[in-house]
Image 1: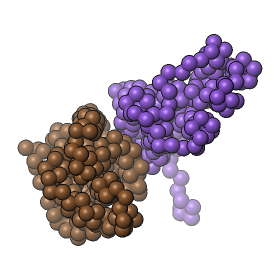
Image 2: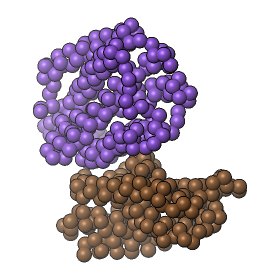
Image 3: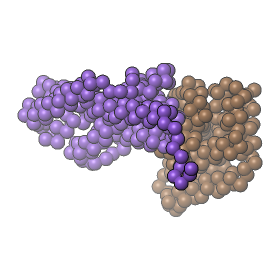
Image 4: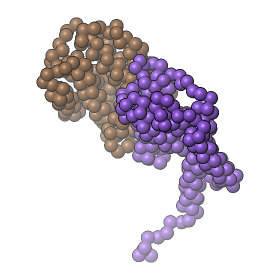
Length: 237
Length: 223
């Protein structure tokens, strides 16, 4: 991959954003008109159609970070690191959505904004760790940034199975293991899932474009430094 | 042989830095005292509160110990010298991990009787099984701590960063250590919470395995 962005990449980005926008609008329509209002929790239950797809997008994003980090260590190609960092950033955004929508749901379902329930706790830990990934990435020197980020991208992934399995492993979990849904609910969930995953792809593609531009700028700068002789300091002969 | 040499080198560096060790001991004792005052003077569940205090103090004092070990090596140029010897990176990691483990173990031996005294949970029968639990918890802490400390080399405010990354990663280990210690101190034995043993072993093994895979990469990145 060369550090110049081809036109097809930009065009794909536009298509993805258009699809994401259309998908989200359709899913919101389905949430409003197609999905029935749940008897016990009422309209608040509809947060489920944003909460669950966001959680799925988070896991996929962090999964991509893990895979791309391994690929970077194996190949040392800059674009694998760019993919890992971009996926991690977008996934962290979705993780934040999960952490915001969760308490809104919890207030209605469990009568509390927050409880130290296994999945909630493990998800918060996950959020903290991946936020730490970005702090480390911003703190280390440019020369070691990619290797260190890749190592972290691998190490932090260990926590994902804990979040995934928290409901089964720890007793006292308030998250249900299986959810009973009407066909309309299932259709709405599938539509929302598809819409938010396309949104994830669009956001990831745009974020990756930024990394691509940074790499191109760095390469141009390096080329300019190599080609232009150092200018004498002002006031010297 | 490399492992032993690296362990002895790190322990020697710590021994020369006696002032820091004394400060670390005072810091961990102060932490234990503050927490016991916060929970007391009438403890609702002394075994539970004592276990939480012991492991919280150990964690924060341990982070300082881990970063200090790294600083000492950077100051003396030992890290670069070690790499130049061409020694196996995993052997270097193991040597450092053992030195960190022994430092944490010394802290544990200091804090255990003090915590037991402050919270009045001095059951002598818990000491042998308690030592086993501590060995499991501190091994995992030393393995992950050494790995993360190497990762945080060259970063400003790495003590903060280590706390941010290391504490959440080791949550299963802390919960296990607190639950098992609590169970021992309350006289229930380890049987009711023995599943935590398995979880702690998994965390330890994961730390050692990931270090085996990634320590060399971290070392190269730090060059």
